[in-house]
Length: 178
Image 1 (cartoon, helix red, strand yellow):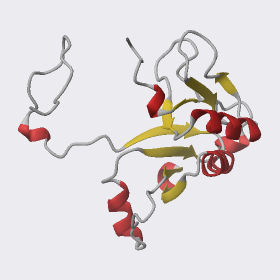
Image 2 (cartoon, one colour):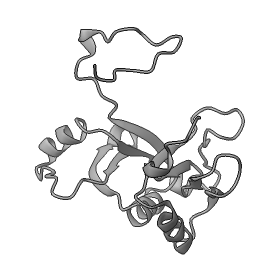
Image 3 (cartoon, one colour):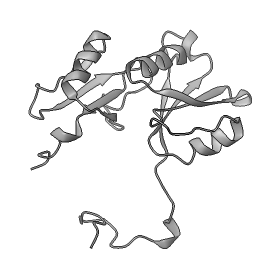
């Protein structure tokens, strides 16, 4: 029998057929200055902007970022690309409220300061040591290095808005939680 779910209190014993096709598509972070955040995510993490949507009457823009797989075809036509973006997994949405970049006092809660809430996003990398060197070479601020603390082989860095980003190498995660 194929794996379905770990069983814990509160986990529903079966999947409702009405949820067939539901998938987690994206996570949204509000950003102070899109130019700074786009430069960070595209340069440091190699993400590409798949689609920008502007909502003029509400004065905000959405930037949808991901790292398409080599050979993956992303539609050129804007409408088809928008539909494609909303059918994917693992998209990062950066939301820019117009004018926030002109307000030096405007900051967003990172979720890890009190009161805690949202925690982090995560990137898996093929080689954690190489990734740490790359992050150091790009002057990325570390919250925790892989050798620090009780949880080894996990790094946390901050993006320009202070959001935490976890960095893991899948091959090093086998012993987590044991």
